[in-house]
Image 1 (cartoon, rainbow, N blue to C red):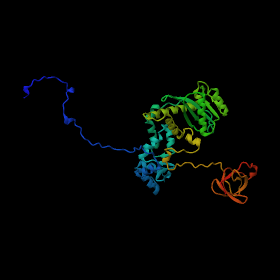
Image 2 (image 1 turned 90 degrees about the horizontal axis):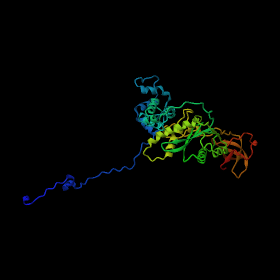
Image 3 (image 1 turned 120 degrees about the vertical axis):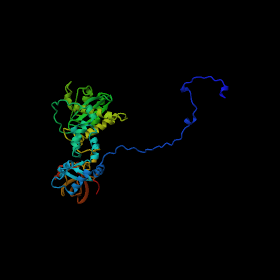
Image 4 (image 1 turned 180 degrees about the vertical axis):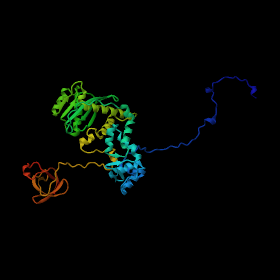
Length: 423
């Protein structure tokens, strides 16, 4: 039949030659299984409960806990088990507290949690010595020191930013109390291209970093006063270089008005302000390590600096063997590491300068602001700061404020020792 027609053959490229193949082009109904994830939790922080659960599931620590409760043998029977033998050598320091095995006041970390605790110890990238100092106040296991050394030596971030310490020079006289002498300096944070002011207390090694928009004296004065306001105190001596803001008439007048002695180091000799210079090096090194870790995030610069300062202020100093916060605030602060040790509790501090009254001690009292100052006698102690006081034969309950010697008549009546709530 096709021979009855005349044909014209035309060549057509394959990409232009569409073959009508309906079956290969019809859509296929395929079911799609959507998985709905409600919440994704990161690793939960460690706690004493986590340690107790991991201790119970750890075969070695379970055996150690059993021996600690039942009693260790009088002689070494564990020569075939080197790890258990190490616990035998320190058996007199072992105890059980809240289902956690304790070595003195340090919690023994099970094998399953040791890597996570090591990461917490090194999260601020301190050196080997400072990492050990932090660990020795909170945690323990037999190979703790060697594990810390391996961790710090194998840290890629630390290896990239590691530096050689400079030669030591004649130091300043040791500060005897907080804010007796502070050191300040500027440094340029190259990774963020911002100017920063660094502030260091010579006594506690407490460090503060503040990003400044400019280096004008007015800006620096505002920043300095905000730092002083944190602790409501002023330094005696302020050490700085000869930069234009510190040598300005406004800044010198600011120091003079607050009775602060401004000491500027010799020109071209930054070593004289060594504490600030070393602190600048520590800050630059730590921040250079932290910024790559936060790459790709929208974390503000101020938050990154605050995280570094939080870690730095809670890590023991190699000089004082106490953290800057502990030196400055006189108590151990609460951190993610302290919460995993059940023996660490917030200090309930009562000023040691408050002397207790005894029964029969004469005191001067004031019922309220509207009442005059009256003489009284201690009848009974209700607590460290509360007493029953007899005033003209009437017993009142009072709150202790200050010690009054037996000869209370030498005190003017306008300085009462007690305030009272009510009869």
